[in-house]
Structures are given as structure tokens and as C-alpha cells.
Image (tube, rainbow, N blue to C red; front, side):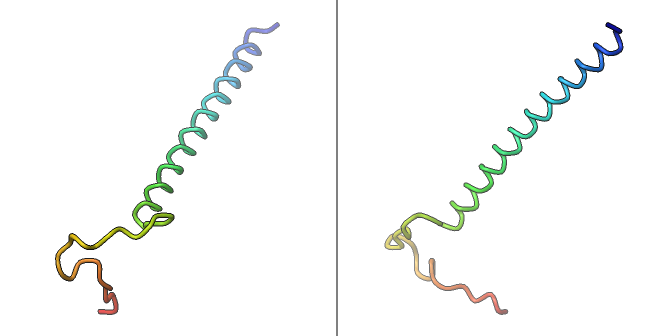
Length: 65
């Protein structure tokens, strides 16, 4: 077997492994981002109690200005 063919096969396998690792890291990052957004939006959670906050906190925000 020609040595250049062996090197080409090994390089191809290394590239495939790098792609698998990159995909795994990307999925993990996307899952983390999704979790962060859902946490910030309060999705899936009960509304937190506003009993212990100061006046004007937790009210409606006028963003038309």
C-alpha cells in the first residue's frame, strides 16, 4: 500500500473526528444558550413573588418612548 494513501486515510479519519467534536461542542453551546434565554424569559416557571421588592419593580414597562 502506498504511504501517501495511508496518510490520506488517516487525515480523513482525523478530520471526521474533529467534525464530530465540533458538532458536539456546538450542540452543547446551543443547549446552554437556549437554557439561558428560557431562564431570562421565565418560560416554564411560575412567576416569582414580588412581595419583597421596592415600589415600581415588576410593573409594566412602556417601551413606546
